[in-house]
Image (cartoon, rainbow over all chains, first blue to last red; front, side):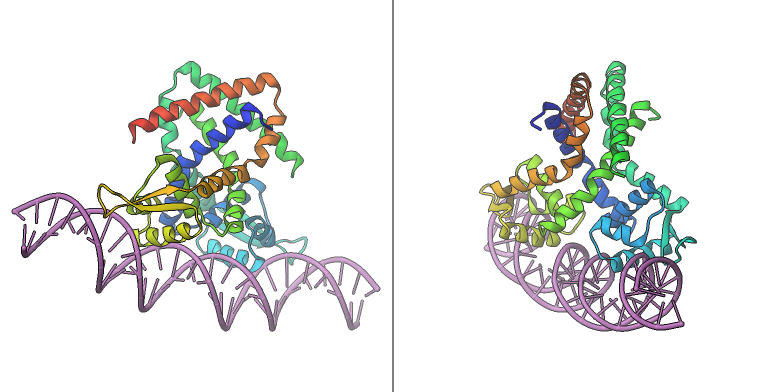
Length: 148
Length: 148
DNA sequence: CTTTATAGTTTAGCGCGCTTAACTATTTAG
DNA sequence: CTAAATAGTTAAGCGCGCTAAACTATAAAG
């Protein structure tokens, strides 16, 4: 808990936050989007198909709000909303190609400083960090499998 | 640009995003705050004293909007707003102790999964990652000094 | 000094996103 | 077959945060 790596991770998150958050906010403004929409896109991107209320729960809003937001996103062509053949009360939300593009672009919008950062590192340093991050990514994946 | 580390960093950012963003959104709701406020707090936390319009520029809103937001934050006791003795047209925004607490808590709100993640790592792995992240943090600091 | 520029505040008005509540459609339970 | 439960949509209303514009106060320039 008072682990040293924990502290370092938190510091690193602060650095990431400081550099990326502003870009993300400006990005959502630029694209007539919102934090909630981007977050929903990421959720669908990761989970695959989602229900309307499921997304609402995830964002901490009512299913009415989620339904309204998704209607907008459908009109913008970011997601598809099709009836679940198994249970026709459900709607399955999935990403369209445009939605996938927006997910990628929202990442790239925050990425600018990262390429500058990488340029400051020697090849050896890059390789070491590469290995470390890959480890974190893999371990997070196993963590996620437990927690659904 | 098509660097491998770059790709990995982007992947890692995606992981961080997926796990932290929802918590942050829920955190701002819980505290009667907003992404803009949290972002402003982080800016002041990092830069020290800021002007009103400076913060508005940073968030991509008018100085009127910034002034209104800061008025709210002053009332909430998150920031102090004092006249610059050097140029009395300026107001200097700084964090109060409460503001500092909120910065820290907003980090901790996103941290939950990180401690779980660390628990999955062996001491050797932890040390390697620790070193790598510290390197990233240090290099970012030198990067920031150039870009003000 | 007077003029112009700069920093911030205040006000009015507008649009957006949320909630509640009523409604439709489908499925499950009795 | 009817009643209850579940998933989603729609409509009305409300509050919040934004902008534009007018305003105050201070500083810099002519």
